[in-house]
Length: 125
Image 1 (tube, one colour):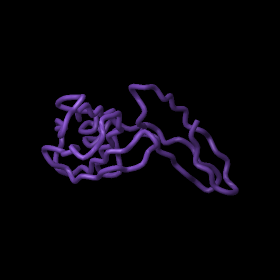
Image 2 (cartoon, rainbow, N blue to C red):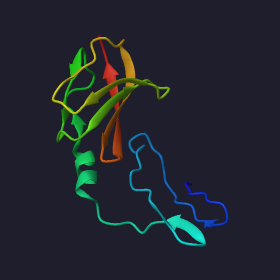
Image 3 (cartoon, rainbow, N blue to C red):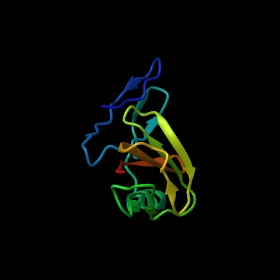
């Protein structure tokens, strides 16, 4: 359950389910009035959300570099370790060099206009 807490207002939680294939929730929005905070009524999928859903790795595992299919040039790409520490940050480009990273499993975070998508990145050397 996710809720927006504000002193003096009642809160209604948004129910979300986290799974291995769905660990990203860009659609959890809240509305607020003078007495309460509650989940916003879902709207249609925006074009940015559709873009996020279209991102995919060309190959995985990777060796020295990887490519992400579907990038438009507006994204920021981050490579994080499994503890959530940012290891590398890239502006959107065609190819991403990770030759300096050790073999292992990393989290790939793609951000576009405040929305993001996470993917698993495996580096095998």
